[in-house]
Image (cartoon, rainbow, N blue to C red):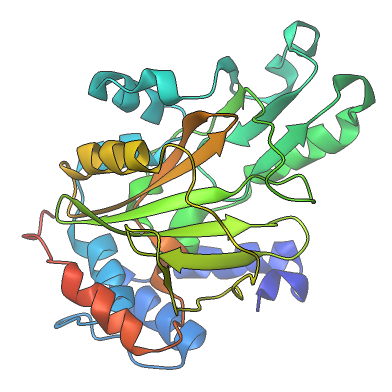
Length: 297
């Protein structure tokens, strides 16, 4: 349940301001207790969700910040030799007033480089609501990912407005794309999950690397619709494992559109480490795959 539905943004900002004064360990223990109703074992973590909290606190390298930045991540992908799998970049701006709408194509996507769920999708430029776009973009500056979940990788990312190619597919009736996410532990891909119908009735299915569905539920129900293995799934795994060579744990997101694979984003803290799996033992199973690295800070 999101508190934002019931609490005024100004009050939430005051709460975040207070949280800023508290040490990471206290905030993460509080967040974990509130979200999952159990104590966080940070000294000897066994669950995946516990190890993500440990990861936030104890493993911090500059490359994580670059890859968490949806704009600077593109340079990392280029260096790895996979730039052809990135959507076309149109513009990068510091504020709404810098956007050159006249030079943009009829459809495009506007994204915030350091947020989650901070996207605007324009399918027809002639019908876009400029006031809505401006207000939405201005609201992104009020989102403090670091305070909310102490997600260290986002700490030093200057906020940018990224405008890129709008990927178009007929994956779902609501117009959303299937979002394929590959989880990698210790340099190897372990499993995938797929998000579908995100705009109207968000569903999520988990699969092994042979595309057998796993009987696991997270914070979204599963879909009963058959989801075929996407075109380019093997390429997704190849790319994800190439990136995973640089991190103890990473999730790499992809789209498969009209016979082509696209890289979406790279992230290190799924669900901010606060998700209840059913069955609960799945949390421990993923935790066994996550060998914690030496502390870096």
